[in-house]
Length: 289
Image: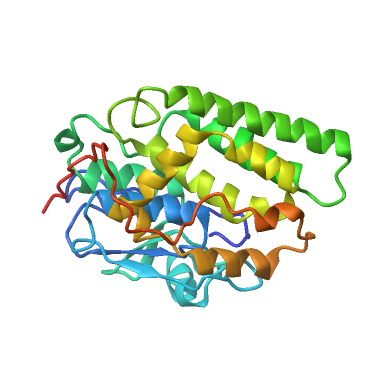
């Protein structure tokens, strides 16, 4: 039975009742802390699929406990694995019928939301699942990790500059990709756009606090990229899930790095969720059931 802090629960939603878990309406709760970027990706996908009525989204506190888990999920974890001592982390897909955790593995949850609860055919072939691994690496490594390294305390100037070059090259690649197209992979929104948008949220709302003003101005100098981020913010599934105050609260609760001059140079007003999503083809995904 799981007893370590690294344990991942990897149950999957099956195609029909022959599986232990299957896509029954109102059977599952999706438990998320929207201050967490991984949870925010899942929440936006849940919104795009229109699953609010079939699978309630349960919001958890912005700041998890000292072990990284949430007290509200502890009973579900302990029902799932006797003697479990790890953190009760989010995201967590909880089976209401048994009170147990189905999965806390975000890529599996994303794939099951798309394949089992949303008819992707109605989106004209759009895929809201985890997406292309190369684009995921661009978001996670070349933007997210590079931004963190560029502002990490105690990092040498040369290393910070290398990380910043990696970050700017990645943003430049995205800027080119968005030339003449509304979304990252073409004419339709996919899971890659959800991933990128959440990465940009973190870049502007978290990593910016530890970058100098010149670096933030260089990051902001990608007009197509940030116009794209603003347009996505105007789509309800994106804007309605965003919690700027919670993201700031989570960051400041755990971060011990020094604030830099770039903290004062916000790129986007992320509270402006009423901006219309013009010229955007949002997939009309109908949930099953």
